[in-house]
Length: 311
Image (cartoon, rainbow, N blue to C red):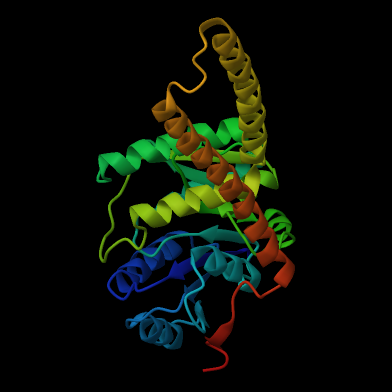
């Protein structure tokens, strides 16, 4: 009997988790020929999420849980889920039901009948999102697809069903700074995209503020593109050329008109502008250097405090 492992990263999801369990068990009943494993990853929640995971694990042997020693982030939770999953197929889902569980049937069918290695989901609308967030999200995908050789699908969710072969390929990349959307694309394999309209959270509040999403997007660009470094080099060369031209202009102006000291306000403005460009370029280099520094430490991606076996 084939098994599907459902990985559910959880951070303060005490309201949504019981509702998620109710819906996923309905799907499990429909897919009678498939064995299910529901793997709840408690990412250092400060509410009753862990207690709910313990309770569900006691009453349903299909439910397992892994609890971190602190909050390590969703990327670490997904990686832990992939490591602990034992299924022939592995799905990643959010606990807030923004990832419709009913799509699992079609995802499994597409892998079985049409030979796909992965079936992912993407939103065709962003209904319910703040307009400013939607605007920046679309801009991010346009920018990163021009910068990176790895294609990022606009509106793609972490919700996807993967074969064991693809999961093992992702696990082979145990880098500390993780951007899973990029890693899913990087490993290749044949992927089918299912489109659906955006679904709002069933309960609780989103943990992703605009600032966190902006930093996450920046991490994604650094993880899968060196274009910002090239841009810094190009800007440096450009301003060297401009400065050389301006030197020639000043020399000619002084010789012809005898006015070598005029225009000091514009010089001050140019100094501030160039200083800003320099700091920007240094910041870009520093961002790459900081990621390299974290990788060389070889710190664990997550630390487990408790599982259903150690309780």
